[in-house]
Image (cartoon, rainbow, N blue to C red; front, side, top):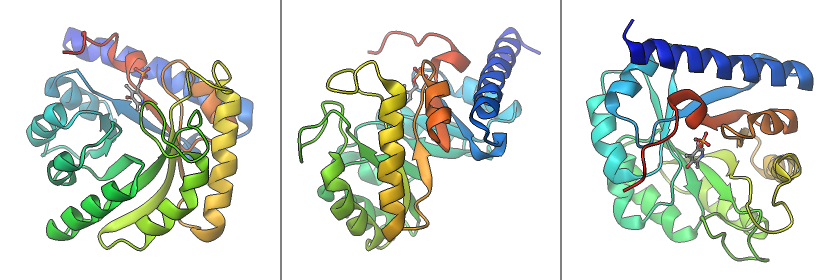
Amino acid sequence: MTDRKTELAANLAKVEERITAACVAAGRKREEVTLIVVTKTHPASDVRILSELGVRHVAENRDQEAAPKAADCADLPLKWHFVGQLQTNKVRSVVGYADVVQSVDRARLVTALSKEAVRARREVGCLLQVALDAGANGRGDRGGVAPGGIEELADLVADAPGLRLDGLMTVAPLTGEYAGREQAAFERLMDLSTDLRRAHPAATMVSAGMSADLEQAVAAGATHVRIGTAVLGVRPRLG
Ligand SMILES: *Cc1c(COP(=O)(O)O)cnc(C)c1O
C-alpha cells in the first residue's frame, strides 16, 4: 500500500471503531448508520483510495471543486452528496453528479433543482437543511431553513418532479440556544424528523454529526454521519 492509503485505512478504522462504539452505547445496530466521507479540499486521488477501501458515500460542498472531482471518479461505485450552500446558478452542474443534495433550504432552490433534474432525466434525493439557530422563520448564517419552515418546504420537494424527499440534515449550531449542546441539537433534529415522517413516511434520512460530534449524533438517532477531518486529516487552507 502507498503511504496515503495506509494512513487513510488507519483513519477509517478509527472512525469505524468510534461509530461502532457509539452504536453499542445507544443500543443501535451498526447498519443503521451510514458513513459519508467529506472529501472537500482533498484530491480525486484520495477519493479513489477511499473507494478502494470500501467507502461508498462521499460529500463535497463547493461545485467548482466537486464537478471535476466527480468527473475524474465517474468510474467508481460512489454516491455523491452535496452538502454546501448552493446558488441556483450552480444547480445544473450539481445535478450532473449529485445523488443527494443535503442543503435544500429555500423554495427557489427546489424549483431550480426540479427543473434541472427533469432536464437531466435524473432523480435527485433532497434533504432539508435545518438551521437550529435561525430566528422564527428565517434562515441560518450558514444556510438552512428554520424549523417553522420545514413543513412547507417538504411539501414543495415532495410535489416537485425529479426530486425525492429523503429527510433532514443539520450542522450543530455555534450560536444560539444550542451552542455547545450538540446532543440536544441533534435530538431536536430527530423530533423534527418524527414530525416530518408523519406526512412523508419515506423521508427517513437524518444527517448529523461530523468528526467532533459523531458520537452525539449517533446517540440522538442520526442515520448518516458526515466525516471529513477524522478520515482525511486537517484540510489544506480554503482558497
Ligand atoms: C466539512 C463538512 C463536514 C465534515 O467536517 P469535519 O469536521 O471535517 O468532519 C460535515 N458537514 C458539512 C456540511 C461540512 O461542510
